[in-house]
Structures are given as C-alpha cells and as structure tokens.
Amino acid sequence: MGSDKSRQTGRGAKSNPRNRFEGLEFVPEEGMERERGAAQKTRFYDDLSETIITYNSSPDIPFDASLNPYRGCEHGCAYCYARPTHEYLGFSAGLDFESKILVKRKAPELLKQALAAPKWKPQLVAMSGVTDPYQPVERRLALTRRCLQVLLDFRNPVGIVTKNRLLARDLDLLGEMARRQLCHVSISLTTLDAELARVMEPRTSSPQGRLQAIAQLAEAGVPVGILLAPVIPGLNDHEIPSILKAAKEAGASHASYVLLRLPHGVKEVFFDWMDQEFPARRNKVESRLRELRGGKLNRSEFGERFSGQGIFAEQIRQLFSISRKREGMNSEPPAVNVRDFRRPASPQLEWSF
Image 1 (cartoon, one colour):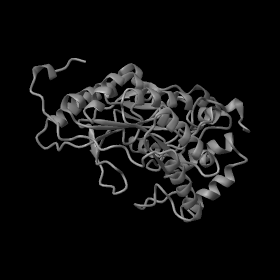
Image 2 (image 1 turned 135 degrees about the horizontal axis):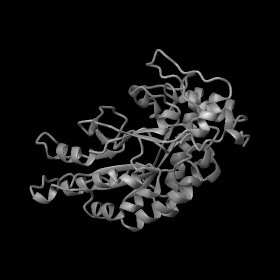
Image 3 (image 1 turned 180 degrees about the vertical axis):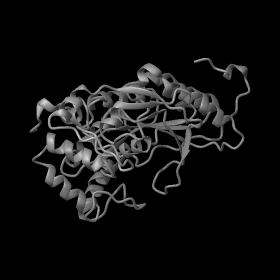
Image 4 (image 1 turned 60 degrees about the horizontal axis):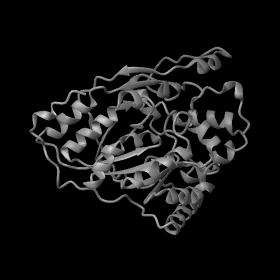
C-alpha cells in the first residue's frame, strides 16, 4: 500500500491541522509530530450540556431530531465529515477529534426530561446525527444503551447508524423496540477489504464483524440495512456491487450511500492520510472528487452535497441503483410507529442507572 509503517499510530488522522477559528497555531519541529502521533492517548472530558436533542431543517436529511451522547469519535475514520465540529470546542479536526472525546454523562436523564416535556412531538430520534453512538467508550459507559431504554419506556422511535458491532450487545432492547415498530438500524459499511478498513477506520469493527452484526440484528427481527458512506471514487467505488451482495446475504433489507465530502479541515486530514497510505492513488481520487463537486472538494448546497453532480456521480448512482435492485433491497428503512408514544407516570421511571 505504500504505507510508512514507522508512522502508524492506530489513528486515522496523522496530525492536527489548524483550527480555523483560532488565531494561534502550534507548529511542531521536524520529527516532533511523529512522536506526538505515536504517543497520542485518548482522553475523556465531561460535557455539561443541559439539553440532549438537537434539530435540523435540512431537506436532504431524513430526520429532524437527533441526539449524540459523545462529541468526537475514537473510531478515527480519516474521511469523517464531523471532524470540523470539534473546532467549535477549541480543538482540531485532526488527532484531537479522535483522541479528545467529550462525554454527556447525563444524556439519559436529559433525554427523559425532553420526552416528558409537553412540547415534545413524538418523532424518530436519530442516534447519532454526528458521531458514532457505539464508539469504544460506550462499552464501558453504556450511555447509548441507557438512552435506548428511555426511548423504549416512552415508546418513542429511534434510527441508529453505526459501524461498530457493539450495538449487538443491545439486542434485548432493540428486539423489543422492533416488535413495536420503534426502531431501524443502518450499519455503515464502506469496504469488504479488512486491510483498507484497518487503516481508514482504525478503531472500529472489521467489515466481517459488521456483517456478523447485520446477521444478528436480522435474526432478532430488527430492521437492518447498510449505509455505504462514504463512497470514495478511485478507492472503494468499485466495491459497491460486492458490498451490497454481502450485506444482503447477511440479512440487510435496505441500502443507501453518500459520496465523500471534505468540508473545512477534513480535506487536510484525508489527503495527509492518502499521501501516507495510498500515495499512488492520491491524484486520481482528488481529480474524481473535483469532478463530482464542480471543481471543488466540497459543496454544501442541498440536493447535491451527498450525491454530487456530473458523469462520475451519475455512474456511481446507476451502479448503486442497479446493484441494490439486483439484490432486492429497499432504498429506505421501514416506517416507524409514533402512535404508541406515552409519558409514563410510574415512579419506576425515577431510574438509578
């Protein structure tokens, strides 16, 4: 692959690009960045947010409400569009995003308050709208699991997107929610190549592990599909038919995709990663991305930011559509049930987690 093995850090980002909101920038001396990258440890900080549900009005996002128990994501995917959100916290979109994780320890209690409020309108809540709800620290803190229990108690539906098989831990809750039409799950599956996944998505489940999670969910009756996100032209776009075939065989019922987009500091993180892992493909990938985005690396216009434009975008769209139909998969998850929402008055809901 052309990797410089001496620079492997177990991280997607190899450095900390400058925060666009900060006037000062730390510039390491030659050789120092390698040492910092190799020694980078994950640190966790308490997030003292007083609300947990966020809203969006974007016409090309299929949900209005979402919750994120964590800010930042230790999975460390080199391409993650959410990286710039860390800049609002005074951090970098690079190594900081995947090694400085903010934890919303009161998320279940805040969610309970939000759903119990008279102004809450029953609707699907997305977990997560930004960072993965099943990143490694979830195994220890179980914030996502506790939020699922709240949603189940209120009979409020949830849609989950994750690339970590850890969600199979919560099959008891998800199975009960599925029986009430209160959930659907999309597993993010970007490649079947274990080595590519290891360097591109270094701290999450292997492709085989994600397929196994799909099989477990399907067997338990949980509506499960895949989100092929992102499609990276020149790197993983040729895998579209095989990914959909493998997902269908595992039990996935629906599938969708998103083209790679590189807002703000993500482009520096991503191309630094490409230069180190796939230098021979770097120029081709960048050229294709610019073709998809009208000469740019990112466009934020509604209707095209996820799908691109031009001949390559149309080729990818057709390849995905034909492959999905051949496998007999739907383009969207099934509808969820909002009719059974309730606000429990039982004292048992004064949980002690």
